[in-house]
Amino acid sequence: MVSSATPLSGFTEIELAFFQKEGYQIRRQLFSPEEVAEIREAFTAAAADGPIPNLSETKRQNVAYDPSDPLARYPRIMNPHRHPDHPLGPLSLRYLLDSRLEACLSDLMQEPPIAAQTMFYFKPPGARGQDFHQDNFYLRVQPGTCLAAWVAIDDCDEENGTMSVVPTSNTLDIACPEQSDSTQFFTTEHVAIPRGMKAEPCILKAGDVLFFNGSLIHGSFPNTSKTRFRRAFICHYVPTSCIEVSQWYKPLLRFNGEPTEKVPATGGGPCGTLQENIKAPH
Image 1 (cartoon, rainbow, N blue to C red):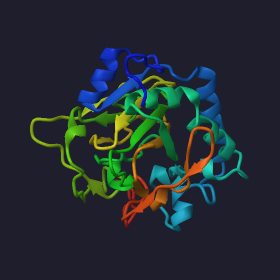
Image 2 (image 1 turned 180 degrees about the horizontal axis):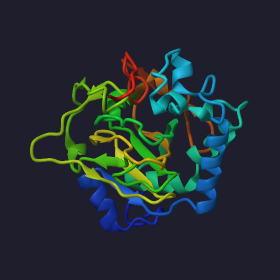
Image 3 (image 1 turned 120 degrees about the vertical axis):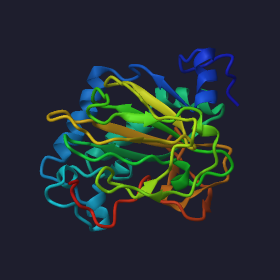
Image 4 (image 1 turned 90 degrees about the horizontal axis):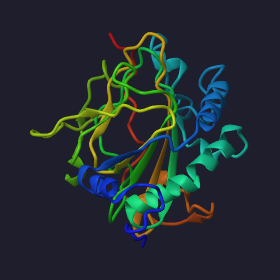
């Protein structure tokens, strides 16, 4: 166990208490402008000719967006850290297992974290958002829950579709999703925001990291800007003490890079299921 009396992450006791109550916390400028530029330039260069075989989600699932959809050119990239033979592989693995993330996660989880997933979202101008959901619906961590580290690669605000969170929804059970609105969101699952709660946009600068609990309801609206991307590098982690995790997230990695095993949970899958009929918004 990690003692919250001596945080390794730079979080204050008040910030750690806020995370426990509200379900999220932001670590400002955890990554330097040079590190953010390294990530941004690497992923942009890799996608210079369009979706990347074995990495871009549409290539992996053999599906395609409507050609007029901005995401047709820039679908999200799934688990690049699992591809050591691709230039994005070592880079993604290095940041997934970064010691600064480990310190933050250890304090927020109150135990050592295990790495489960990497993703990169381009979210170009005009792109749809990802409907409100709970990450542990996909990871199926038991007991406990997962935790996300959402690294802003561009400045993020309401115009370019920043992440929005529903404070205190981390106390709720994992909901059975409804069908989302395909004109606004590229994923199928929709979790309704309970009465008395509301979504709050997270205004982030490039290099900020948003951490949030796997039960927290969160999502993003479309990028309504004309010229601005909203790129993000996203990592998911599970607590060492958990017993089950969805099979989709193998191999799990300790922060020393060694693989570790958990019992395969029933169900689960990638964070957000693509719409069956992937069309451009009207």
